[in-house]
Image (cartoon, rainbow, N blue to C red; front, side):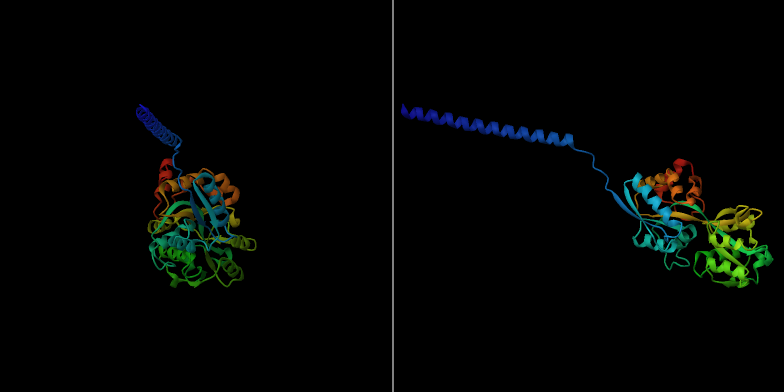
Length: 338
């Protein structure tokens, strides 16, 4: 009898152990299920990884640097890309920075970008990873002389002493190409390799007759010259402009307004464009957002530098001359820009 009681007590205890174990297992299972449900409910969409971009500009005393600072702030405020503006040696150096991966965005002139992609002039090899975002404002080709020189046309430069910039520079290439469409070469003039300030000083002193100057107008050195003498800017005829643009698509038609340098009439000429470019490794959606943010915040650009007032989305593809980044093209297509 006693053994039977002990046996029954053993069975009862064993049943309790099994019951407790089963309950514990169910609780654990239920707890696990609840946790998974809660995790599923609380799960958020993954955030896009923030990009960090380097925008190379130009010297701190030039136009590219303050504009670059404004662009960098706009991009940082309106996209998922923290962007820093960095001073540099400007156009040619900036193309090398994109090529090496040291920069993601850069300012340059349209003609310099074309030379880079073609491996010409100052570029020993083609740079293949550059894509345009947008042309910004004109860098005007000004062929400067004075009324007393008697020079009235580009053809009149034959036999004259003319400053054409340093060999391999953008200004030198501009001079060669403009002479070319007029049936001339450097052999038809007496070329001098002078800076802009040296050029206007030379015109003033009479040591040179004329100078090619590629810069935004009004250019300070030419303004200084106009304060002491009657300046003449040689015009480029309509048919020559067309020939130039057809052969070298980075040029755009331009006009120097009457009143500039005390000119009585507007002067037709051409310009290359200051341009923003990007590495082709940048994501299409990101470049779209970058392009959109800049053109929808031009008031902030203008507040940083007066050249910002010349930036217009309708002119963004003028004279670009290289392939446009797909992200920028998407934005321009939406705006009807061609």
